[in-house]
Image (cartoon, rainbow, N blue to C red; front, side):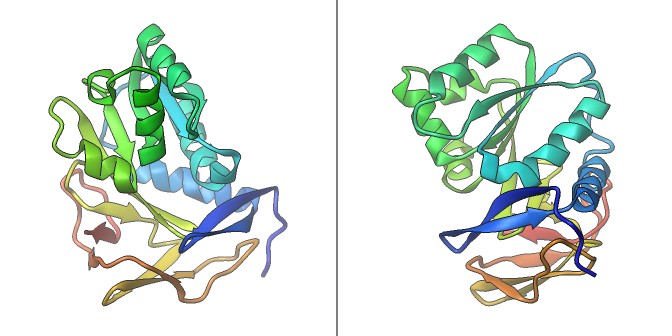
Length: 220
């Protein structure tokens, strides 16, 4: 059954942005997924979570924001673009920010271009980073760095550094074949997918992660 969309976001189809209609039911399921992965993680009530993204990231970030707010985390935002680095720095400096998601290479460049050191800025914080952002931060000390992997319309996130990035196995079927990962939807959605190819070489680990969460994990 095709569900009625409540928002139209975007997904990255191997470098090509495509529209992604998303239903309210899917947002609720994604919120539950984040809650399961991070169930044993923290007591951050009253602290701040900085969510960095674009409107196109709504299908991934809106349910994360909802889950964090349900735990008493106060959400603040900045844009994942080349000119919003100063707002990112000011937000972290002025508020008790405990976590940041999602840091890309563009976000790091924006912070640097505004005259600030991202490594210094992220000290003592949980930081979800993707792609080049993760690569550039992985040798830094003092950051609780975790992977965020975009898989077309799906997402994989680490609950612990180096523990592998969780995929919602109830929502998605993930197949790793050589240099390609195939993504298929399992449940009713506003837009379904059948073996969508993603240019990613990985392995799938189905064992429980160190944090105790169940389900498949992407290991790079």
